[in-house]
Length: 141
Image 1 (cartoon, rainbow, N blue to C red):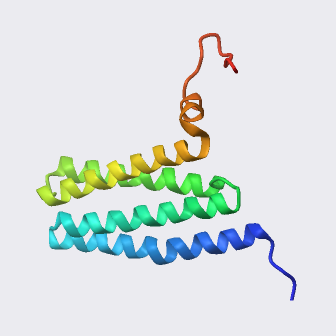
Image 2 (spheres, one colour):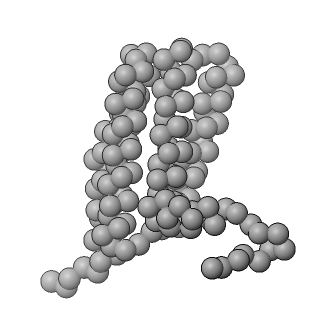
């Protein structure tokens, strides 16, 4: 039987992490919404954050970053969740616990993004990813 290449092993690990922890976290978040409990939803958000951290560990072990597909899925999911959250807030169908659960989710997701940039590129490198110097040329030291 031929050995699998490291990228295939990485993809299997990432899939297993999100299939186990990601779906569990999503289920706990949805249970928190149905029970109208911020504490239960926060537990789900923590589980999702754990899945993201595990994904970052896998990336570090295999010395890779997020693939284009993973990045597109993450940004798309963030945008879709943002639209759904705004529609719920404007529509007035959200309870206070649901509102705070959504804010907790988006806050943790933003912190996760910053944590990824910091661990992957360092503080200075993360800032350089967004900062554009006048004249269009980046200064390198």
